[in-house]
Amino acid sequence: FEHASLRRICEAAGVTTGAVYFFFQNKEDLFAQIVQDTAQQLTQLGHELASEELEHPDTGPDCDLRFMAFLYRHREEALLLLERTKGTRYASFREELYDTMRSAFSLFFHRYGAADAELIRILVEMRMKGTLELLKGEYSMEHVLQLTQQTGIYADGGFRSLIAFLQKNSKG
Image (cartoon, rainbow, N blue to C red; front, top):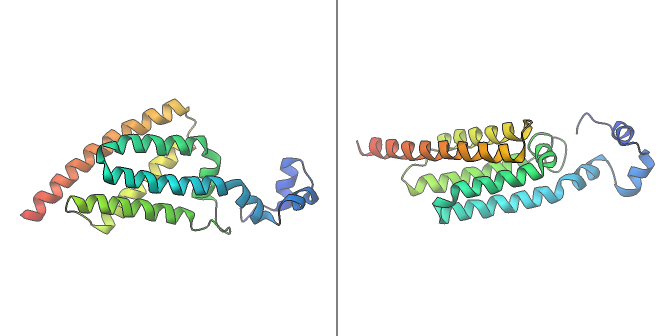
């Protein structure tokens, strides 16, 4: 966003800058129009899935699949929101999404007697890096969901082992 000029954007789209200014106030308004619906829906979905999984932990794998399916369907907008917002009103979007995930992870871990903030930060970073890898890759929706399911199984097993380890070491 920062390094793209409106003139170059218009050239690539095959329209005049006047035509763009007829519909949008400026480059930032154009960007916002592209991502705003996805940003709102993604924020809402993130909160819904976090609440659902906290209330019903066994829904975690399904929540992961629903989250990834949404991201995949809105892949271009999601990648813009997660990686290309510097200089826009969405500059804090990624951090807000990560904060939501950290809060959910923290509540979930706290339920089992473990809530190390640094561990949770690292786990959220790992989760989101995996998510970005899937979005950036040349995968079909079917393959993305298959990989999401498999990494979810791996994460669930790791979570259970980690909680057992932390509970054992906190008593000793």
